[in-house]
Length: 224
Image 1 (cartoon, one colour):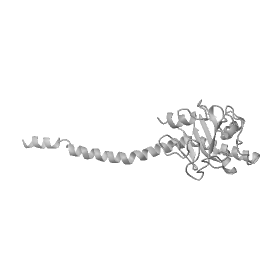
Image 2 (cartoon, helix red, strand yellow):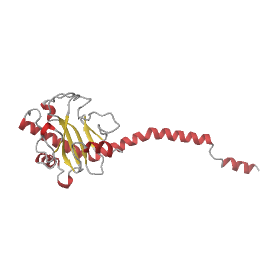
Image 3 (cartoon, rainbow, N blue to C red):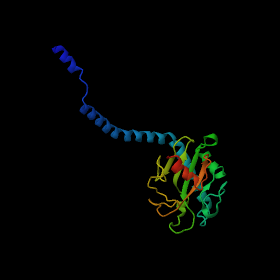
Image 4 (cartoon, rainbow, N blue to C red):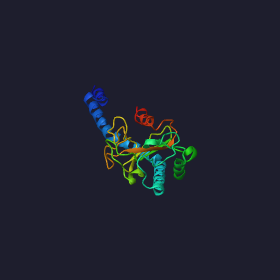
């Protein structure tokens, strides 16, 4: 009889309280570890495509500096880069300059020509538009300095964003996040606050237009 009693005690299962305690401990560990693991995953995503993204950004900056050396401070309203293939240059609007000599030279210098061109590479410099309403004119330095980039290696890779001298997978214009640019591309925080940005698409395999649909696609379609 004593032997059977000992056997029953040995095979006794967990109580409900013990199970709850274990679950609580697991939940606490998950709350601590998941953000850390996500950080490692995000960092890995950035590191994988960062060399090409940085090469494109550096090549573009060099090209804009060369533009300044050639043209100096342009008259207000004159685009820093002309020759857009499918966008009007009047009014200093954002432009898709992919397939132009200027864009091709940037991609060649970055070592990503032909089939190796990124799915999307877009940069933003200070706009050369005249002071208007809520934004102020930019300096010559602003007009030739890249403050923002969007880079996608392929159709299926997440975009990388360059802003404030660092790369991130967080889109400053993403829906639901406090944006650093408003709908008119006016900077709302940081050293360029109150100034407008102008965008140049250097590599574009998306089939999207620079006049708005690229932003809709980046802000909403990718982040559904």
